[in-house]
Image 1 (tube, helix red, strand yellow):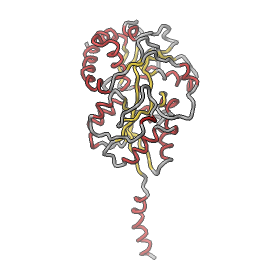
Image 2 (cartoon, rainbow, N blue to C red):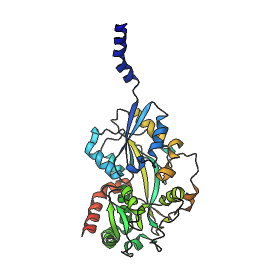
Image 3 (cartoon, rainbow, N blue to C red):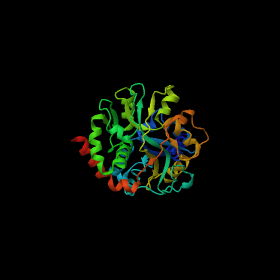
Image 4 (tube, rainbow, N blue to C red):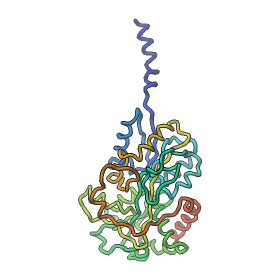
Length: 331
C-alpha cells in the first residue's frame, strides 16, 4: 500500500503538467487592460473558448510597445502584440518577428478596406481635440485656429516618441502644414501645457481640469455621455479634416503558442471581442458586432475628410519629422 501511494505521488507532477493550461502572453497598452477597459471582459470571453489563460502585459502606449520589441527582438516573450497602429506597422514589420496571421482579411471592417497579411485591425477612430465646453466657450474650428489661437487656453498633448496619439498629432500637423510644420509647432508651443508620455496620463490631467483641451479621439465624448451622463466634453470639428488611427494586432512568428495566438486573432474579429470595443475602448469596431452602437455615437463629430499617411511613408520619415518637432518645441 505504501509503495502504491509513493507511485501515485510520483505521477502527480506529470499529471499536472499534462493538464497545464496554455498561457497566451499579449503585449498591449495600459488603458486596454484597465478595469474599465476591454481587457478583462475579452480575457474572460476568450478563455471560455480554450483551456488557456490570457496574460496581459501592459507597456504604456503603442510606440512604447514598439520600442520594447526593438530591444527584445526574437527573444520577446510576447505571443501577440495588440495596440500598434498603421503609423508604425511598417517599422514593426521590419523587425522580422511578426508572422502572417492567416485570417480572412475581408472580415475586417475599416475605412478603405484591409489587405495586410501580418497585422489585423481591431478598432479605428479619428483623432480630435477634445475640450470642456464649460470652460472653453469658443473652441478652435480648424488646426490653424488651434495653432494661432489664444495662448492662455492650453492643450495637453502626447509625446510622439512614446505614444501613438502623440505620433498621430505630429502626422496631422505634417499633413496640413507640410514643409511649414516646424513654424506651426513654434506658434503652437505657447498653448501646450504639457506633453504627456501617453494618452492615459494626458486624459487624466484633462479630466482633472488642468487644461481645457486635450488631444484624443472623436469618440471620446461618447464615454462621458454614456458613463457620466454629461455632454460637457466635446470634440472640435476641424475644417482641414481629421487624422485616422487604425489599431492592429499581430502574432509573433517564433511564439511557442503560435496556434493559440492565431486563434486569438481570429477571435478578435468576432462579436465576443468586437461588441466590447465601442463602450470600453471607446473606438469604432473593426469586425462583426451583434450589438448596436449607443445613441451617443450618433452625436459625434463626423469628419468631412480623412487624413492618413501610408505605413511606408511614416516609416521613411518618422525620425526626421520627430527631430523637426523636437527642435521646434525646444527652441
